[in-house]
Length: 483
Image (cartoon, rainbow, N blue to C red; front, side, top):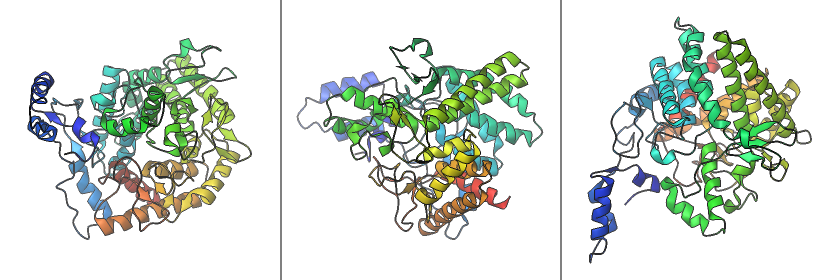
C-alpha cells in the first residue's frame, strides 16, 4: 500500500489515535480482515510535494529552480499528524521528504539568497529558533518521530548567511547575531550535554567524548535505541543479523543524525552493514561545525560587548581546532579522517568530510594543499567529487556525489587560494546537473559522478527529485562562477 515506511508515519489519521487503535483491536480478529484496507480507511496518504509539477521543456535550469521554490515552499499550518507545526513558511527538499530538514536547509538557503528570498531565509531561521526554544535542540526534521536526534549543526552558518544577506539590505549584521544568540547558546548546550559526567572511567556521555589529552570532542548520537519508525522494516530486518540489537539501532539513528545515512564510513568492516558503529567515531565534519558554532557565539558576544564571554568561546574554539588537527589528521596519508575513540586510531575511510577543515579554516595552508591533492587525485571524476573512495550499495559512498559536499569542498578550496581546482569541481558538478535536467526535467537528490549517464543509486529508497539542496548549491555555484 505504501512505497516505503516513511509514507505511513507521515500519514494523517482520520480519527484520534485512540479511536483508530480501538477499531483495529476490534476488527483484526474478524474473518476477512485486511490490514491494507483498514489503513486506507483510517489514514490519508500524504501527496508528494512536486507530484503534480511538470518541468517546461527547454526552460533553463535557473528558471526551473526559480519556479520550483513556490512548489517546495510550505506555509505554516495546523497538523494532526507526525508533523511538528512551525510558525513560518519553509522549503522542503522534495520527493518523500515533505518536511523541513535541518542540514538540508542551509544549502537550500544558499539558493534562496541568490534568488533574493531573504524573508524566506529569515522565516526558516526563525523556525529553527522556535524548535530550539521548544525542544532544546533542532531535530533531524520537523516530525515527532525525529525527536531524539539532530543533524549536522549548521544553525550558526545559517545565522552567518542571514546576517550577511541582511547587511546587504541595510540591516546591521550585529543585530542578526544578537537576535539569535540565545538559540546559538542553547544549540551549543545540547551538543555539549554530559560534559560534567566525563572522567577517566567514563570517557563518553551522550554526544561528548573525553580524549586522552583531556580535550573534548563530539560524536553523533540518538536518545533512542529502538528501530526508526520511518524505516522500521529495514531496521528489523537488519537486526536479524546481529545479537546486540539495541546497539545497532542507536548506531543507525546516530548515522541519520550525521546526515550520511548510510555510508561505509560508519562501518567497522566496510562491506558489513551490521558492523556500523557510528557512536564510537569522532566525526571530523561534526567537530568542524561545532568549532564554527563556538566562533559564532564568540562573535555574537563581541557584538554584545561581553568580552569575557567572547573570550571563553574563542578559547573553546582554539582547543577544539587543536584537537581536530591532533586526532583527525594523518601525516602519512596527508588527509583528515574520522577517529575511532574506542579503538584509539584513525578510521581508514577516505571521505569528503575531510573538506570541512578547509571550509571552516581549521587546516593550515600546507595541510589544505595536501587535502586538495587528494581531492583531485582520488575524488574528482567527470561529474564532480565522489563522496568516498569505497564503491558500495550505500548512497553516501562512491560513485555518488551530493550537492552539499561539492559546496563545502569548493568553498574550502577557495579559502586557501586553490581556485583552479575549485572552479573545475564546480564546473563539472553544474554541468552534470544540467545534463540530467535536460534529459529528465528534474534536479536530483544525488548524482553518479563517475558514470554520468547512469543515475545514482544505493540506499533505503529510490533517488528523489525536487531537490532543495541541489537547487540551492547549483544557483550558488553559478553565481560564484560569475564573480
